[in-house]
Image 1 (tube, each protein chain N blue to C red):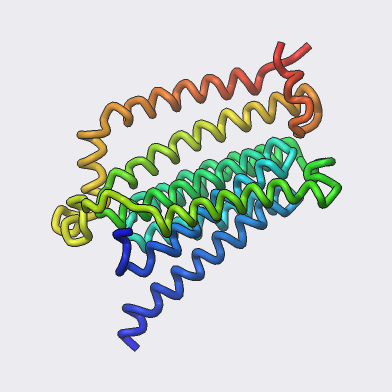
Image 2 (image 1 turned 90 degrees about the horizontal axis):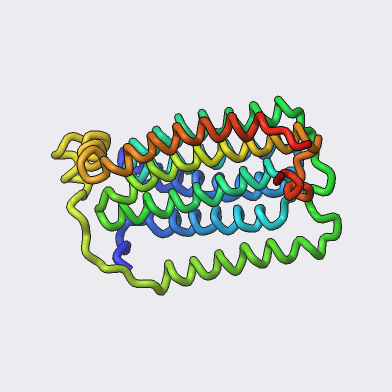
Length: 179
Length: 105
């Protein structure tokens, strides 16, 4: 039983998260009601956060839930309810023949990426941050913060500037009137 | 590949590729701006998943930091896109992309 909790349960949970992510991503694309699509997208983001946590990326998992599933999706649902978009006419092509192009495009991309993942090669040099090294250095969040505030300090500050510009841009765009 | 041995790597990569492909199909399939924005978020999530998985496979943290920045850019992109959507709806009373070109002055 203990062996099952250590070995078997994480794998079962991992498969559940993967299947849930893919199935609800298809629901995002196919559901016509925007609110249902948004909630399916929240389900995708939460399952991906679960996958992140199982790969020991705890900080990224927390950011995924707080920022993505929390803030961004609340913004989406807020806009859907503000504009009361029930269902959009001509949202999807009426003729089922035109469904072939997007599905084929997605399928080709998926096959291409799968081919690269199976046949591709990588440099093969492993970095210093193994599980044991991260554990010894004080955990995932501490190690990430040390790297981010030393090597990545300039991109980090640039992100602050980007967010400030984006607030101004969003307000200007939303107030815009075309005569 | 150097991810032999860890059972979580390959399914996660396939899931990331599937999320990206479904998002791409959604962008070409849907016509409403809000659905297209959600599909863009879907594609970004697939990329994030791939980055985190490779970061774990290579014992390298740079991928996780990249994901943090991508989430920030996605927040900015979502805010701008929804601002565009509100501007479009106020002027055209619709959310399709057909009349989006009339928004330029």
